[in-house]
Image 1: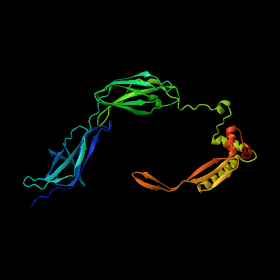
Image 2 (image 1 turned 180 degrees about the horizontal axis):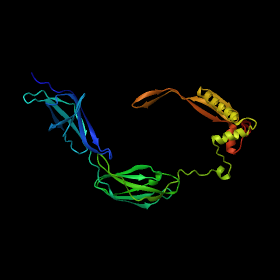
Image 3 (image 1 turned 60 degrees about the vertical axis):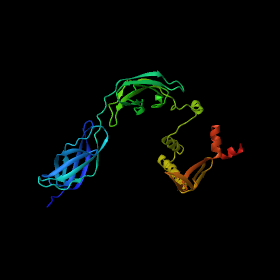
Image 4 (image 1 turned 90 degrees about the vertical axis):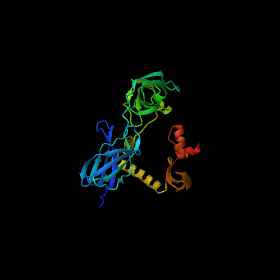
Length: 332
């Protein structure tokens, strides 16, 4: 009577990594199957070529699980199909051979060496609309990323250079970071990489560059005249309470908040609220439309959205810099 072949084979693969560096140190193959440990034979097929018979270590008897030892995966960072053949051989008789499903194994390349000689020179600082210009130099036998660390601590890749290059001129680094028109420190770094992993990021000494001033808010004529007032919610509530000294401030605040909630409730249900000398809060509906999304035409249903129309007195009063009623506005 022929001996039984191994059965119920479920093979798996995982990367083995150093717990401190998280870099791959090997590849581990395990298999769950029903087998006779005394007669089991295993052959590894890598990239369609036999890697010979393999030994194994029993990890568990219930459920039966083993680790396949001695499998040689090329350390090239590429994927390699792996199939295992299993059979029983008691020295006098051999079972049928059963193959596992194909696994895909990858052994990462070792990290490339860190770049050396990393330095940065400022060729031109920002001046008006003329952008800054810097030159980064380095030495590396690998492709590299050029990284900019701005004054806000944000890091971003700004260039990718080939292994044959050792310098690059970059413009406009001050578009990153704070845009306040002041000088700030910027750091440029170089990091070598391969298809699997990267080296340490090596920074040059920081350089000073003048940021643009796009975030600087210029004072308005009202700011210059000292008439502009910027009220927070707390300041407004305090002012409102002062207008009704005989009423508890909490009551005044509650009335005000209740009024706001009522306006929101009316608008949310499709209505409107008209306030003389102030404006009209209202809900408006979009029309049904057909749009092209994700390769197909779909119908977008009508949607409600809030809107506000300033009254004539409000609009004209702001233009003139004073409080004006609608009646006054309509007389002009």
